[in-house]
Image (cartoon, rainbow, N blue to C red):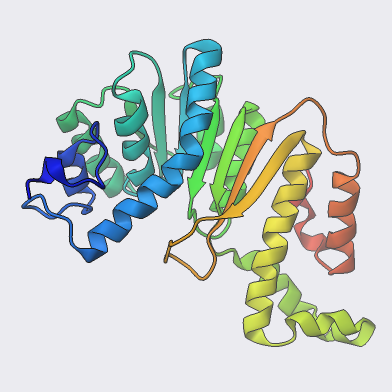
Length: 275
């Protein structure tokens, strides 16, 4: 079977790109592992494509910024499937590792993806960087490790992005603070049993981190959809948070956020989650 006859691959998809992303083998075939990867890619794209289309329909322009871009996997796929056939729209990847930035830039040039830029910046630098447009429509962060997801949220709020798409990764801050105050919490409330054991501390810390992120976004006027990416094997949990900028913040979101921080002895993290 020729590669262009493989039914799983969308007709507009660049086969060279799929090879570079190791979704297709070098001889243009799909094996079991690459077929699973392709299914994951298209599953995520199904969530993001309507957001791209809505922004483009509203203003015939689009600026998407992907934080913690790594090899710019997500940016390349979005550009290839959505923007390549259009005359407008830009994708920006933000990555601190210069060797990955160099490889992504070379690939974008080779594929003729002229409106895909990969910038060697930290999130803090990207907020004020003149290399990025003053208006950003969509911010994504796919498995941005530890606090990088929180940094992407801060960037999106600063830019007043219309949509924010997050697949959070590990985040050790909350678990570390829970661990530090565990004895005090166990003496005060039986609910501390939820995170008494180390594995539960890690898992509960991850859960609370995402709850706090959602409350933060709601306090800034975003309406949320929280679901799961099915079939992804990157981690034990693949939570997908899609935030749409609305007209008004949820009335008690900031109060609830502050209450959770206080009740779990997480006040040390107030500046991370309450601003």
